[in-house]
Length: 168
Image 1: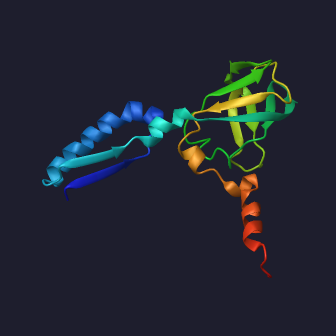
Image 2 (image 1 turned 90 degrees about the vertical axis):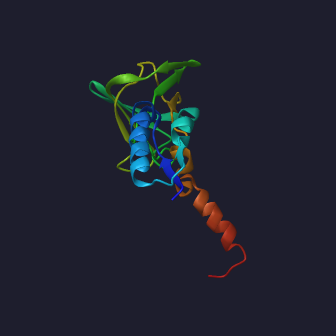
Image 3 (image 1 turned 135 degrees about the vertical axis):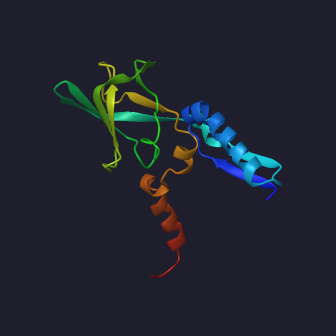
C-alpha cells in the first residue's frame, strides 16, 4: 500500500481539538505498519463547510409552560438532520435585529414531531413572538447534504413527474 486515505468526518470543534493528535497517531501507525506508504490523505471538508451554512426558520407558535417556553418552528430534523450530533449556535430576529439565544429552560419544537425534533436548554429572548425568525448556524456539510427531500414535499413532486402518462 502506497497511499492511505483516512477520510474525514470531524466537526469543527473536533477538528480543532482532535485532528492533530489523531493524525499524529495515525502517521506513527502507518510508518510502523505500512513501510511503502508515501502519502496520507485526510479530508477536513465537514470541519471547513459546517460553519459556512445556516438555516432560517419562522416561529409558528409560542407556548408558555411556567418558567419554560416552547417555540414551534417551521424547520426540523428533515432539514437539519445533524441537530443533535454537535452544537449549533442560535439567534432570534426581532424588529430586524439578530439576538443570540443563550442557555436556559426553553425548547425548540420542530414541525415534523419526530422524536428528534426537540432542542432543549435554550433561553430565547423574551421579545420573540409568532412570525419572528430563528437562525440556526453551523448547518453546512452533512446537515445540507443529508436533508430529507421527501419531508419537504419533493418526493411527491418527483413521483408525480415519474407517474405522468403511466397507468398503475
